Amino acid sequence: AQAVAQDIDLAKKSRIEKILQRGELRVGFEAGYVPFEMTDKNGNFVGFDIDMAKEMAKAMGVKFTPVNTAWDGIIPALMTDKFDIIISGMTITQERNLKINFADPYIVVGQTILLNMKHKDAVKSYKDLNDAKFTVTSKLGTTGEQAVRRMIPRATYKSFETETEAFLEVLNGKADAYVYDLPNCAFLYDQQGKGKVVHLDTPFTYEPLAWAVNKGDPDFLNWLNHFLRQVKNDGRYEVMYKKWIEG
Ligand code: ARG
Image (tube, rainbow, N blue to C red):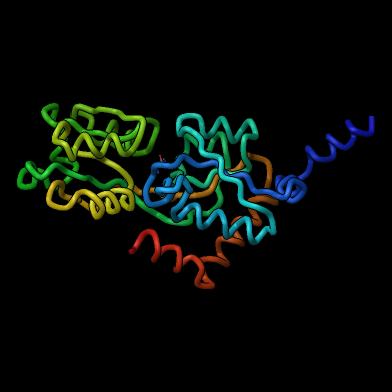
């Protein structure tokens, strides 16, 4: 009975109590979304989101535990308690927000295009791609995919499991354009795209990215929003931003 009473007590509490009790912040993300979360040569997770997650764990006084999770199962994994929070460049969409809560946006991005060089004169915006003769790629279950389906409906859409595969298809000339979040396109362009693809870098969607937690936990959201405000204004955010996104 005592154990049951304890369970009930814990169930009422904020996720914060569990994090402190365990002494770890378990962060769910899917590595591969450069430069937010990726795996380096030594197999370590690195990137803007990873640095932010470490900073968050530090502010809580607990250890950071990364939980690399497939994108298509990341929301169910949060809901079934595989980790405490999603920090994975996730766009706040109204559909996702019916299932989970989001903290305030930590960055606002939008969809842009990496276009195969051969179309540089013919294609100047996403509107020019709206023709079945163009093959457009993106990643399964993302807002990139949603943007292609909704805003470039006539294009031939090809979905991939990873950002890398979707981008390489365009780099290799097997597809015409890769549609994805601005910082991801900018990073891929700098690293591998120069001279081979063109970055049409005017965002054509509005996408606030935010950390996601389970519903019914105002204490956790309150902590996250104040933590975000603090890092954004005391210089820590700027350091991370310059290191991963602007640099
Ligand atoms: N912002 C996009 C979305 O929410 C893409 C995020 C992909 N993140 C990742 N870690 N693979 O759909």
